[in-house]
Length: 231
Picture 1 (cartoon, rainbow, N blue to C red):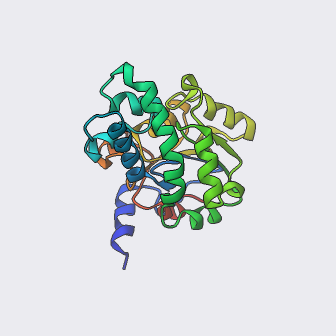
Picture 2: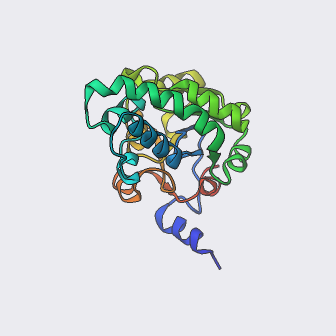
Picture 3: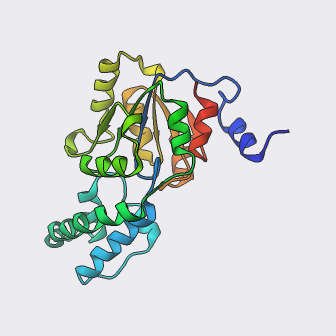
């Protein structure tokens, strides 16, 4: 008899009994591999306090995440350009040591990466590359990944498919055998823009209903679900 989570996978993912052949896995970081939602929220509210502004509810701050830290700050200060640079300075000073202390991988992340250790794997975040490096070093993930791509150049950040197209060429992988795994709509949009497979992670920062509306190829409620859906 199948467990409840297996039944959900079966209903949502047509390939449950016939896993997809994927040679290149591209992962978002925050909300996909790293459970950082609350830490980001806490750091933003700390920034708002320092600026003398009222704290914001968690759901609202979460809705700002995913396009890069400057966008996150702009939204958090309600577009007040006089506060953006100062807010960014506060956030960039506060968040790295906070996430280094509090950050945790989602349960099963290392198990999943070990399962796919022979596949090409890339981390692609709209956050700064320095934050990818900090988190990967803290959690000992460097050896599992072939490349780390940050959003330091806003023009090339998600949903721009530029980096994914570069990866397909570099690793000589056809689009049908590459997959973008992420917890935000922008991640799924990026994968679709590049013409590759997409997997929506409902356990992260994005709202499940929003993710489902993008019609990803796969939907997972736990990072370990990927092991049953990809070969």
